[in-house]
Amino acid sequence: QVHLTQSVGESVQSGGSLKLSCLVAWRSLDTTTMAWFRQAPGKEKEFVAASEWFGRNPLYADSVKGRFTISRNSTWNILFLQMNSLKPEATAVYYCAARTADEASEQRNEYAYWGLGTQVTVSS
Image (cartoon, rainbow, N blue to C red; front, side):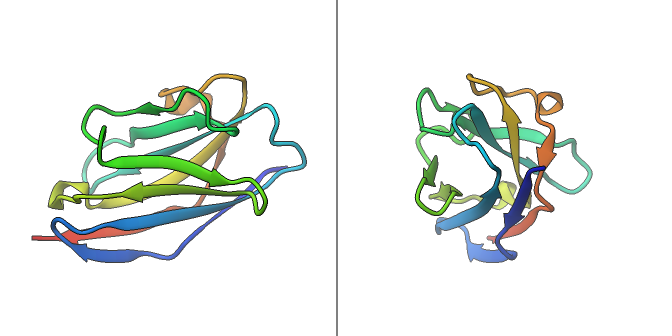
């Protein structure tokens, strides 16, 4: 069984930065890909970033390229999402997700395991 434990909600002003974390409890991460999705009020959950556990071939949504970075601490099994130059439209609940696969994917229905979400609020 996989358990994903996310950090608490955070707030920041427009232009600021936040770093989200997700503690991954799984017996084998060698063939795991991780992702971040987000869901804004009244909108569908959308892809943000994904990568294999060892960091190869990361994928990013066009809206966050160059500003967001997905990474992990392999010693402590923590997945991160560094978010820079945040805009108010980034306000959403952010979810980390995991699946057993060799390649990252943007498709939310391909991820079997989900964290409970972290509320991110960006004020103008």
